[in-house]
Length: 244
Image 1: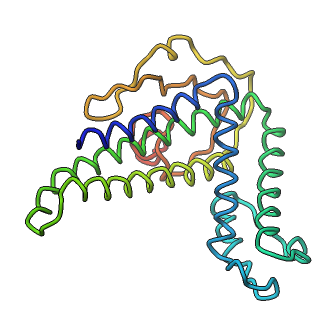
Image 2: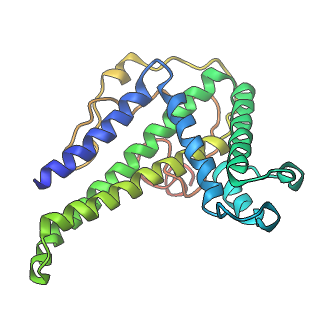
């Protein structure tokens, strides 16, 4: 039954990977879903539903927007908004407009490729960390019996909480990187190599993913934060690898 928990989580992760690697707009659909959730969370986490607009403090909303999307709301934009639902709609529209402008500026083909690389790299890195956390949880769960707790029940509960945190991290980290990445276009974007599509990637504990995570590199320079995972796939931070 412990394995059942991991199998359910693994299914979700592999479904995400299949969506990212699909050719029918899977990446765009995932990013837009993340955007909707992230924009709404920016508002509802800082604005009470029944609070009157004149009592709103927009500063925390802007701080979250700036960190997550690299943008902010102006006072003039918020003026005249009558309730929290309208504010959520306004923020969603602003985020979507910023995203569309960026896709137009970078070129849809290049931007889609960058999104795919970011999503795969972020998902695989978080999944590896999550597997280690679940190993640690399972290793120590037997001690719960001494505290008159059902070890399996506690494992399921805490495993779900860890997995929910991993998915939240996937959304937040992916959005931040997609919205803040810049690409210097020099040549046409090369197609993803056929060999890469056939490769299988070891995720952790000898597990092999059903889809590849390696992508042909984007022609041009992608700005990577010094503390971000290195794009080369080494698993190290950029500052300790290619960013030395």
